[in-house]
Image (cartoon, rainbow, N blue to C red; front, side, top):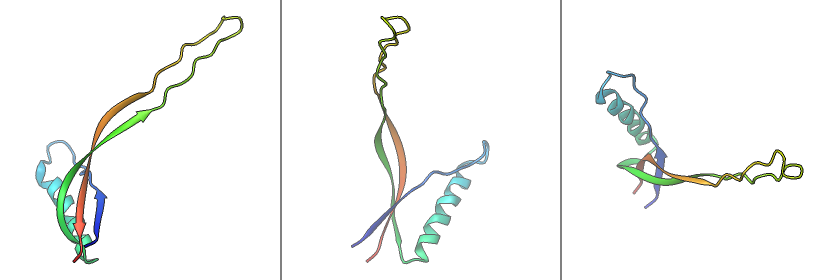
Length: 86
């Protein structure tokens, strides 16, 4: 059984409420259904996003030297809609 996973992020204006977000998901589900994909679930995909560190410089005889910066990694949730076909 093949699966298809699509990132989903609702875009709403403050005060619109969950109904607008649900409507956006519904539009995605209906659009995929026209291509034969059945909605399976909405999942959270936890991902580590790493910003690479930068090497320091030694400057000229130590003048103007800059320290190295370490790589920074943070966990970021992404939401994905899962579809399947029989």
